[in-house]
Length: 165
Image (cartoon, rainbow, N blue to C red; front, top):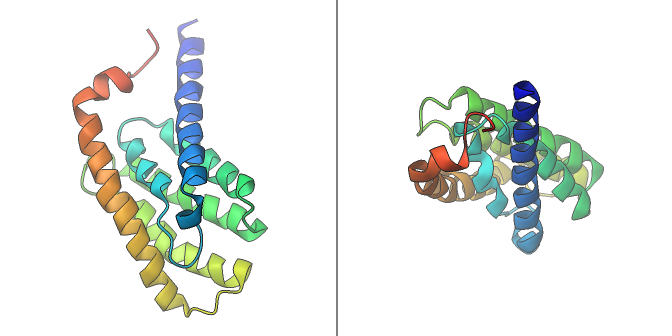
């Protein structure tokens, strides 16, 4: 029964992360897409610091928000994979608070400009798109994400319990 409680707890945390990601992306949809984007929901990419459930939650949240907001098929696939790669990297670096934000910034900075080019026909040069997307990621994850991480640290044991009671 205890393992079943752990599984339910894990899935609940993952679903909550996905739901919050979707809501934030949809509320801020006008600035969440395009060559110059500031996806507020990307601040959640620091959550693997606290729980492994954030990894599938971020992936599913990105996948569904891209679908719900009408993103191109290549964006749904590769944008979501970029978030998954970043989330896995954040989880692997969870022992270093300051390094947690680096993998999602890098994954999105490298992958999303190619998505913009081939999914949407963006005329921007890939290096220019890397700068614009990277700047948005630094603001969303590096600034907002680290602020969120700092705000969650004092309550981490209440919010991110290791197992169900």
